[in-house]
Structures are given as C-alpha cells and as structure tokens.
Length: 337
Image (cartoon, rainbow, N blue to C red; front, side, top):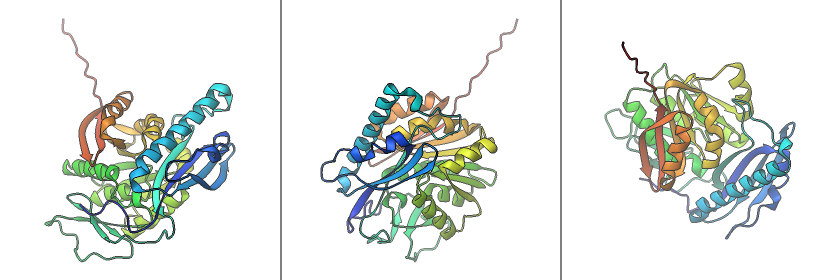
C-alpha cells in the first residue's frame, strides 16, 4: 500500500455541517480538543431555518479519530438537549429529506490546499491506483496487469484521495460487486456523502450506467465535479447537493430505484440517513456501508437489519470496516391440504 497520510504538510481537520439555525448558533461553544481547537471559519443560511457551517482544527493525524468522535458527540448532545427543551423547534424529516443535521469530515492542507503529497501515485487496492492531480502515471491501465483502474483525484483533501482506510474498505466492497458482474450499463448507483467523488468515479469506471453523487459541502461538490471531468465519467456521474437531492428524490420518486447504494459516512450521520438511503435501494439491490471501526461491526449490522437489510460480506483494513448488505428475502411457506 502507498502512504495513508500527507505528513510532509500541515493538515487541518475540517467539519462541514448542515443544521437548524439554533444548532449552528452553538457551534462557537464547541470546547477545545487536546492539541488543537475547533475554529468556525464559515457559516451561511441556505434555506429558511437551515444553515451550513465549516469548522477547522489543526491536530496530528493520530488525533483525528478521537476529534471526530468528540465533535459528533457534542453535536448530538446539543441537539438532544434542544429537542427535550423545545421539541417544536426540531424539523420533522420527510421520507427522503435530509434529517435534523448532516455532518461530514475531511482533511485538507491548512496552509496550501493545492499542495501535493510526496507520493503522487498510490496503490489503493489490488486493482485500483490513485493519481493525484498534477501528476501523470507511467503505468497505463491494462486489463492484464495488476492495476486496470487508475483514478485521477484532486489531492487537496486527504480523505478524498482514496487512502483513508474507510474509503479503501468501500473500494474493496465495490471490487467484490464488480467481480460478481453487478456493475454494468443497466446499474444505477447512489453515492451518499461523495466527498471528492472517488467512490462514484470508481463505480462509473467499473461499468455502472448511472451514478448520483450527493454531498452537503459546496467545496466537496466542486472537487467531485472536477474529478469526474478529469476521469472522463462526467456523462455518467451526476453530482448534486443535499438540497438538490431533497428536491430530486421527491420529484423523481427515487424509492426502490438504485441497484447499489454507497454510504461511506460517520456512524451518527449513517444512522440518520439510513432509512432514506435504504428506501432508495431496489429489493434485489446492494448497500455498501463504510466509515466505522471494526469494533462497531455488530452495531452497523444491527442498524442495517432495522431497515430490512442483511449483511452478506465484510471487508477490513487498518482497523476500519465495510459491509455489503442486501434486502432480506422473506419466504412464504404454503401449506397444502
């Protein structure tokens, strides 16, 4: 495997959140984290009563997981306190709407977001390698060699370059579905929380006919669109915001229309989005859930089971996991007289 971090550069952990105004007003009160403090860098109102905000925190890579967990818990706690004190202020979720809040994390260079890592080419899985933008590979895709798939990505976001273990697990799961000939021109894929679009791009290159990629962060959307163009799959991959998805999912009746759904999300976000994501899945479709530690496999499987999904395969990498699940088939037994 290639390098899984960008230690040659100063990194900033970035939290992007879409939430009710009452919650965004509390973000400045997020307490300091050891070796770094969350700093509110941008906030704006998108629709009535809903805001988007970006917070950054410069800390060592070894602190990322703890910082993400701590931040998520503080947001959950603030939302829980508000819902108990003023329940009428919490918006009710529609079947396909974005829930009370949506939270995504990424990593980017704090001093130079266009900085490239020392290693421009990274072998991510057994058949996928990533080429950071600004570099060209000396190894051309060859179906008879180890790396038939090469993906060009903007290296400005570490979590978007395919090197984070949760993304690697999701890519391994996609490889598994491809090996079963499930990614073809008739296949429709939903990538919820696409980030820089690497999973959506991989699905398109593997053969999917149509991919809908959704994210809440405007900068992620811009990067994803740039990457789909660089990989020449923009005609297959439709990159849209969470707000657009909320409108599109209602107008286009996306229930039971996707063959594969991808969800590489933090556990708290996955728990909130899973009902709407699973509702989009065809009865014989597959869902890939990633973004959780190996110790949380049982919890992740239980969350899927509540949506009528059963674990079929599991993939692990560097302490992280991904699950491939499908709809549980209920067999009716007919008794004959």
